Amino acid sequence: MLNFFKRDPVKKLERLVAAKLSQARDAQRSGNMPRYAVLTAEVDDLGRRLDALRAARSDR
Image (cartoon, rainbow, N blue to C red; front, side):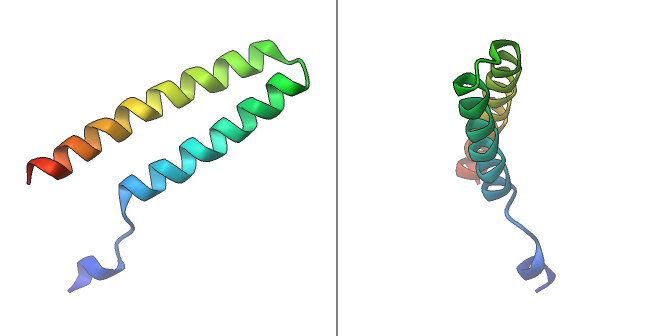
């Protein structure tokens, strides 16, 4: 019953990935390529974590 109030970690990571992609896009458009590279690397790492969570969820 208390699980009802817990947030879904997959949705949380999806929102975080979307925010980071938006920040990366803005950095690229402003010409800040080092910042763009850092943000895309973070998105790549978050994507791997998201895939692992989805795989763990599907194994249940």
